Every structure is written in structure tokens, then in C-alpha cells.
Length: 391
Ligand code: PLP
Image (tube, rainbow, N blue to C red; front, top):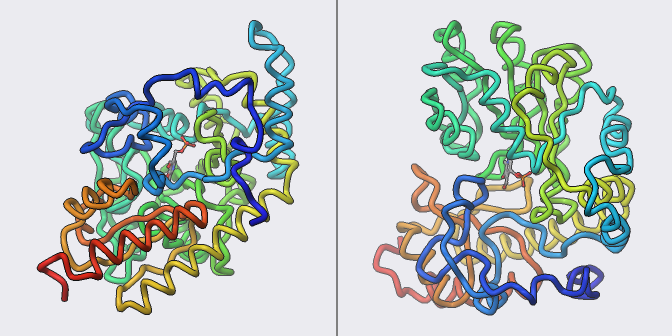
């Protein structure tokens, strides 16, 4: 296989992981979450237990950063003791990548930081965020934390976002709405919002309502009906697009993401951001943007594996929501919570439950061997009829 786990192929800074005792997860609990809040409260697991797991719970890139990115990060360790260090020109590189100006970029310790910063900037107490349900929950969790509210619009029967309902909710609550959140493609379904519907949303709501468009899984999309929303920023619309190095670039543990927005919005948001991003990942990010060959390889192998696994599940009679991301949802026709625990006992970590989709299991695309471990476990747990509620 072309893509090996880049980190396991060589020692990155002398094998830091080997020195650690605990990773922060224990059997019987949900494998640590994707949000900062969830990670703060994650319980303990030994490194050995962690290493044994097929890690299909958090939509990570199983291959890790590319050779070029590892080299750039290793070289940047010489700045570990500095505040004012050369940063590789990360902001300029991101701006050039998108054809915007550096003033349009806000860096975050992961795009998760930018999602929080948007909440801090545009939601006051009792303000509202409008978005889909289910979607990536960190925006709603943060809103709750700051005593704002969420107007959650259920997905349509075919799992698409209900754009007309989002427009109506925004218009009806105009004075109270802090911003609208659109995750494209959506997590946990992997379904896109087509480009004409993004436009319909932006044209259908008052122009001064900010719209946060989360493109964390942008790099995996093939559907020609999808388009990035970055051009709306150039048009001067009140749009904030977020991107991350956690997924396609394999840097989730290193924490780098960013928002792209009109200058005034970036200036407003900057006051709420910490700017606490490591020197090392800034250099890694620049190298990742340049390593388009690795990006293409990760996309290709991920989609091939997704198609292989989902075809097998479909041929066994299970409905799989067509996904444009590095994960998919399969309808298992029974409550996912005990099933997730059964997978765990077999050292396969799968996604949590996403109410109200309580019979859909979310599975990230791992390596080929992780996916075959998933399929073996699936057949043993679900298809072999261990469960009573199989339809
Ligand atoms: N947005 C979506 C839709 C995600 O699924 C995630 C993480 O899984 C994030 C944002 C946050 O990612 P990060 O903070 O690692 O950039």
C-alpha cells in the first residue's frame, strides 16, 4: 500500500509517544471526543490500550503527516524556546492558497478554536445560532456554555440540510440571531449542501447575519454540485469559512486551523482568539499546503476504502448514507449505543451516537487493516444476528 503510517515509518523527535503513560481514554467510555470540552473531560487509557484500537471514532487521518511535513516540523523544533520566531509565513501561505489577503485569515489552534471564537464574537447571552440537527455539535455546546441558544433545524428525510427552514428560522428570529452555522459536508452524515443551496441561504437571509461555513471535510468531496464558499468572502459577504489541517493533512494532534472572512469580521474575532499555536505546526502547515501530491494520495486511498467498505455493507442489505467525507453512516436498524460498546470490546472504536439518528453508526475511514477489522467485527456483532431488532 502506497500510504503507510508516516509517523510509524520513522521516529519523530525520538518517539515522544513512547514516553507517555496515558492517552486519556478508558474502556467502557466513549473514545475521546472531537471538541475541546470533550477532551478536557476524557478519561484515562494506557498507551498500549490505545495502540490496540482501530481508531474509527473521530474522522482522523490514519496516515499522519507526510514526510515533507514531518521534516518541516522537526526543523522547526529549534524555535521551541522562542516567542518571536520565524513562522514560515503560514498566514501569507494560506492567504495565497485561497487568493485572499493575509488580513482575511485568522489562525486557530485547530478550526475548533475558530468555531468557538465565532460564538464568542457573535453570540451574547440569549442570542441564537441557527443550524442543522444533527451536525458537528461543538458550536451548540459552546452556545449553551455562554447562555446563548440554538435553533436546530432537523435534517430532511434524505439527510440533506433543510435550507428553506433555516432561512425562515433566521428571518423570523432576525434580531436575535447571532449567526448561522452550516457544516459542509456535514458531520456526522457526510452529506454536502450543494452550491446553489448555499447561495439560496445567503441570498435568503438578511445580509448582515454572519454565516459560518465549516469546510473541515472539503478535501474529500467529489460531487460537482459542491463548491467552497471562499468566493463569498471575496464578494464581501458576512461569511466565515473554516478549514483545518487535522483531516487531509493528518495534523489533528498538532492543532492548526483557520477562518477566512472579510477583514472587519477577522478584526472583531481576533480579540477573542488566543493566537496560541505552536511554532512547529505553523511550519508543518506551510509544508502541508505545498504537498499537493500527498493530499491527492490521501483523498484517493480514503475514497477507495470508503467505497469498498460501504459497497460491502450495502451488498449485505444495510443502508449507507452516501458520503462525501472520510467517514460514513450506516443504518444498523437498532440502537447504536450498545453496538458501539460491542465494537469496543473487539478493540474497534467507532463514532458515538448522534441523536436523533440513534440507529445510524458513524464510521471513520481508517487504514485498510483497520477497515477489515471493522468489517469482521460488524459481521460478528450485527450481521450474525446477535441482535434481536434486526429487520
Ligand atoms: N468541524 C468539524 C465538522 C469537525 O468534524 C471537526 C473535528 O472533527 C472540527 C471542526 C474541529 O477540528 P479541528 O479543531 O481539529 O480543526
